[in-house]
Length: 218
Image (cartoon, rainbow, N blue to C red; front, side, top):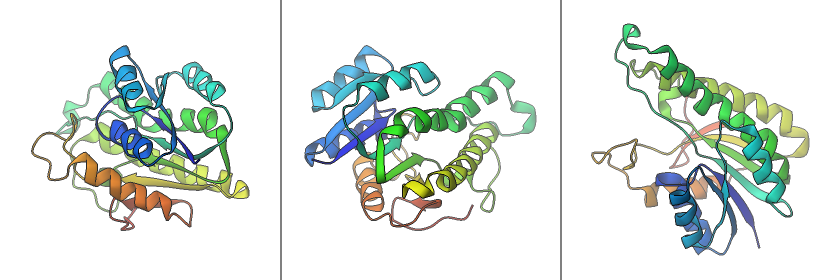
């Protein structure tokens, strides 16, 4: 039975990843930070772990609790920001965005990622808003943190290449979630189904891809 871990799965896209993988018969390990999120995951039939992407000790405990190896690790945790001008940047908010969105996935990779088998896959959810080549301005902290995430995962792809682990950053599209808002055109089911197809067919490393399989500019 294939196995997957989803870091940041209490709601939205992460919860939908857990639901679809459970439904397809995978062994699913998934993390949440609070009792409500843990309850939702257990209700799906996933093995729920209390972990925070910014707390490396909790991630290490999650890794220790996973018996055997993982075929796939998905790091989904993230926060948004919507500053219009440089004058709007709040240093504390900027630091939180960078910690959660850029550093957090690397902490997950060096803890839970040690469980990924040789030839497995490790992906983190990024955004087209992290593309420097396709920058539309605004949302400074979010854009900067996702650009930093992209570079970190590109470096990780090089480090994990000897283990034949495919590393990718995925853009889920504009999705109807708490972060994306009700006006978003894409529902979580379609976004996640598309990203799962991308992960299943991933045959190269160090790539930036959207939920349809289209490669995006860095």
